[in-house]
Image (cartoon, rainbow, N blue to C red; front, side):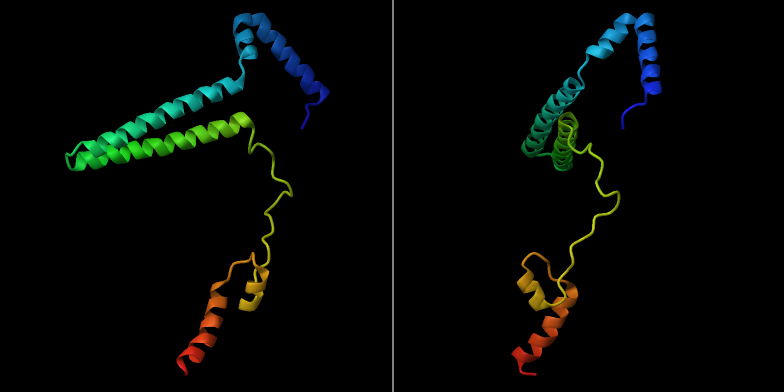
Length: 146
């Protein structure tokens, strides 16, 4: 949502006051690109991932019982955390996921198939438990001769 004229004037006044009070800080803040911050985080996450791989391998090489398991699990958890950190940084850097949801509410789910034959013909809907029960009740007596 865009700012009103009054809010824009207030923002310009705050900005000019900041430049007058501390021009060095204002220049540093204005010239910093937020994508640089996210790129640094991705590089740190990649290095952390490599350290996690090394810890995992070291845990496999060291044969000291519980210490081996603890080092390997720590390395694996470090790898997972670094992957999540890198992916969230990449999403923020690329601007993915910042768009507001359209429709304002929960999205409607597609209708499920009502019977086994409808499910076979639909192709995309998954069978429900009740469908399996109905088919089982019909097939078991027919197959077993009951």
